[in-house]
Image (cartoon, rainbow, N blue to C red; front, side):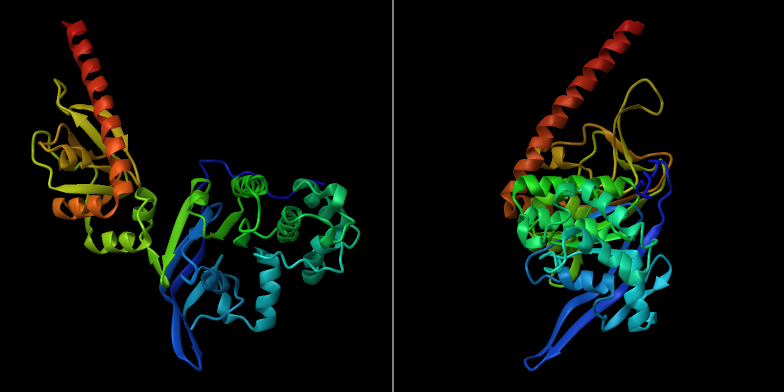
Length: 384
């Protein structure tokens, strides 16, 4: 028997699978009201491996509870693969959750009186999936997948913490749910066990599963395809979080407030060579071409930058005018975030780590530009 999940081709047009619309969650207790989520709008696509990061108390776990239907939003809507999660009754939602979501809890939640094989079979029994005779075979295959085949008959307390977490992941996969939700799945694991689990999630994502992983560890974002940052119940601009990951969450939110949103049509000029540069630009969507002036009417494209890249930093840090022109690629429009020179200088002072990272990029790009210039000169000399 083989797993039914199959690798999605890279060219596949992946659909929007999860849509969270204006989600607000307010808790009321004797001390008063506390709003944990403040108007969350979030869309996740099929096959994405998403890290949700934020400090303790930022709203990460509450966000997962809204997605999984474990708790109700105060206002807003959650739609998963076209299904309004909160339009169902509690019993309908429970059955839907068993068939569509595989949940990996932070502390595993394995039943102590059942062995690992029986724990993995449990969701199949609950939602009535697969023939009774097929369930043990499928559970064993999943345990083999996470390296626990030899421990199938052991109780959870008889295996290590890392093995319990691996068993919890196998259980989450038992109904072949399209979405895997994991709350701090590596928080109690050593580095070796952590790498094994992230490798497994990465493989599942490649097969088309949508993985949503809550973590407090920013380094995990290096292994995921997308990062969602939450702070005080609000989502931080993803472009800023991806482009400037060394910023603190308060600084990310401040940059989002200061940045101007700009839109350019395909082929439109953004910066002209030898003109002053007044802004630091971050690409939200689309692509831009960096162009050196030459004998060709349209210039020579020396590099192309895409989403979460930036430009304008060389001139702002080193002074002087633009050394090249920058224009929107001819095949798509471009969305940019622009920080003024004043705000860029403020940011460099506020975050020395970010200043160092951008300075390193400046040195690298200056070297690349010089090499490109030498190549152009050689071509011109050769034609003569």
